Image (cartoon, one colour):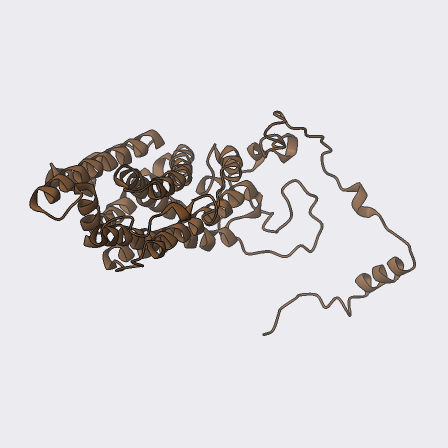
Length: 369
């Protein structure tokens, strides 16, 4: 593989002369006179340590990031002096409103503080050999299969966009890196649960994967964020709450409680990003509506997929008999209606008005009522 460099440092005379001076012990020390602001930052709360908010000061502060970052498409830290000759990294996302949210700094600190370990923070030894009758265990493992499938897209999507986002938005990129870790852990924990219970993974869902493909192929980061964080992860958060309420073992309840805290953070970022985006671009609300017109169609398929809907009904109703299935349908429908209502409220709090009137879920509500 050939690596392109505009400079051959082994033949670049100014560089070689600098190396010769260095070998002679002659230091230029030009870097000591960098024209940057001198600051001294201390923790506002010693219990939390030095946070991103504590160093969000002066010329280094995020409030000074312009809407369009024009000349800093480098890996240089925001606030550093930029010498001539820095390479253009080719960042494509250079507008602050395309990625930012007012809570980025605090969410990053929360993400670090609330990390957990899927291997040791769940007492897998307490999962009984026969946690549930085999048919119920199959139903639970089918849900775990579905969640293992969909959670990894929330790893792939940020990982796809992080290299394209300007380095001036380093706090946002840091938050997305934490989301990658969160979602990898979610995939891990559901895969482990399926294999630890004596059944294993069951069937993937073509319906769900059409929705996942749509998220990954979104045209812009803001589209991808609204699709994934508000639509996709919003409904997965509701599925986690449903799962925790119908879980049959302490291990399963703890799993859902742990993943919920992460998912809630991702959804919160998505809501606040949409709010920031619309505040900076009020004329682009229709663009978000048009994207959701298509995205909701895909999500209806994922939510109604038999690989998710049927095992949830069985688990909620605690059986396969007619009365069990009916009770399971009632409970599952209740959670679906609640999830749809929460989705509408999040969009409204983010500033996107009129979604209820044109949403595909309005028709779904009518079918479920």
